[in-house]
Image (cartoon, rainbow, N blue to C red; front, side, top):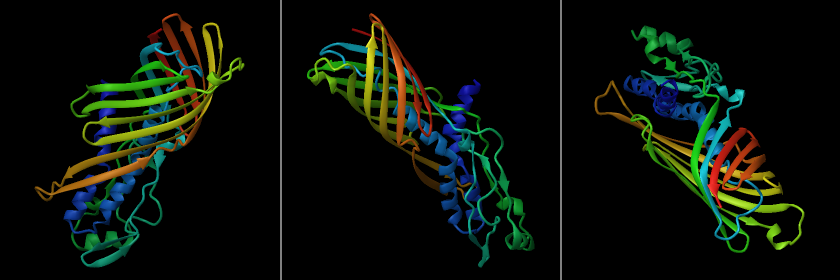
Length: 328
């Protein structure tokens, strides 16, 4: 239950970063630049989720440098976890340089420079609350307003060390040293608040060593594309291209790869303004993952129809992957 609650918190409640504060402040007449502030800080807060999700989507596309012979195949499950580096457990909020209140412009209304460190969605601890400062605070008091009503509250972190992903995966050999990979996650509603999660991807691997008889190692190139949808508020996509080398030793296969990749996530959310019935804030946040390249090392064990795979990725976000498949 705790894991389920955390997932819901990160992918729903976490999306509301500063939006409640923005709606209240807008109703009270403060500059709508707060809404832009909310969008930028939302991106910082959720950035580890976007990067980790993209890193996981770009993982576990191959289990060796060899390709299946034509019409040979395997079907199985791959699970990946992108490890969040400690530096991404916190971020410093972007604070507004100026705000207008009762027709007067105030500079550094919440203090100069970036705000104090506060947890990202995956970090541990409670979020900070930043209160009005200086002349802006005094103006609020003089106007009979409570400065705490204009505070900027940031959400708590949920202490999540890794961003997980799992897919069903099928590979089939094609003529001329090619192998097709299809991977998907059927639409699954883990929680009503979280909404349905679904994913689909396709990749192609080509054996370079197929054209060099007697070459002592296997060499292949691979490319893959995958998308993911969570409810009606999160969409993500990932793509990669890899060069793979490996060697088979009876039931054991060792492989290593260098990979280029890209990922992006779009989050859409709507907040009802409690101060203005019927008024709603609609926000869209776009973000790109930090991983642009990786080094991969792994091994596979082939026990006739049962195949086990494990690999480790070194990149901005390291990834641990494991899989089991069955096939011929």
